[in-house]
Image (cartoon, rainbow, N blue to C red; front, side, top):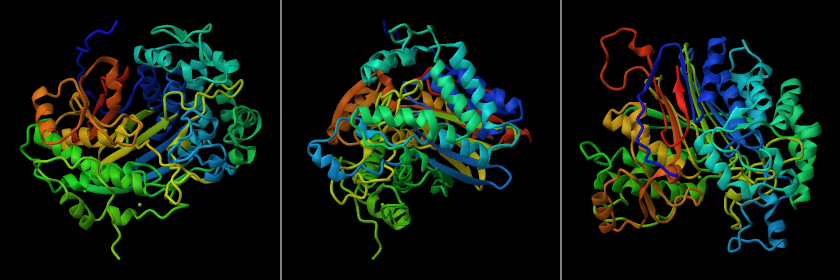
Length: 553
């Protein structure tokens, strides 16, 4: 039975570090790592492994991961792109041979959509590159190992998603690895996953080779090929993460940082640059004019993202041109204050391109914005024999349109939806944040950030506020707009009068998952300087009420 979601949350304050996630037990793991001398990056990796046990419906070692790290000593934001590539044998020609095309897309859970899982390498690389040196990867994986072996009670939202996504799991001979006595776990039921513990032990003892070579790799290749995929051992053993220079844009004097393409973080930056020149000050929060401007800016940003976001090692993506002030001005001029433009077209920037999220800030002021995902719930739903996890279906985000920048091709990273974020002011950390949920993520980033910057909300208030979502969560932000319960009927009616197409209004209960689940940690006071000289070290955190989690200090 669905019940009203009436509980409220206060922000969580701390001085010695904060961890926030969609699972309280996982947030607890993060704080324990900090107390044992680990830093924010160490804590995020331990949380990534632990949450694979508690929430395999969203994330796991069979998926990808991205990391943003704020280094307090240098005041620099650095990044790791931990997304995997397509198999060498995957091509548009192969898909055409199998009867698939832009007009007849491949099935979203097909074995052909499985790309190399990048999470395991990203975990190791994050600890090696950004970690404190006080704890090893093996130490950090031990939390997940113990949870998987001893069992954990499953939370409400996860239990519901597990049941609704059971149909994804395949092949049938392996599904019991992610069930309890043949059924999906109920809320509060204890779940163990000894096969996943064994996978973690292999990674802990052998490093990346324990995943990308040997037993686990062989199991991945065997099940993918059994179900019609084309992955080979060489695809796995050759995988590497990439340390990247984050991209950024400014909104009202605050610099917002995202991972560059193939990630879609640039979408949020494009929207923020368009919005920075619109008359937002003084508008009623979630009133008709405010919502109109945000929806129009996001439609324009997504039109460009769909056209230009791709793997930069394979395709040319005009990042600097897209993020230029002149291009933002050109796109902003397309927005009418009185009338919706409908589905937007991509511009030409050339002058002559389901998920879990963790936010951790440590006592030294380092921050880690970390996101890990299978993509669509269990991803492909494909379970390698004896491994205890599912493989992602990120390849479904490739374009089947010939000559498109994001066209499916061998050894290529697809358009990626997962996007960790950070915000700094004058080089100082301000927010470590993220909102998960397919193509909702840039929309969520814009909405919660503006809640804080324009309306001086705390992180918890910013996450509590009702949101909108353009299009269903995995269709690329096209189509009608859905509005969460709490956005007034009057505002929705006036938006319809402006020409906005509305698909849902008053979305409530578990269906609110459409609007994503976020975590935010703020460092220092929000807007008004506090009298206390120690206020700049105060951490204030919020955790999304649409999930089961919390922030812990």
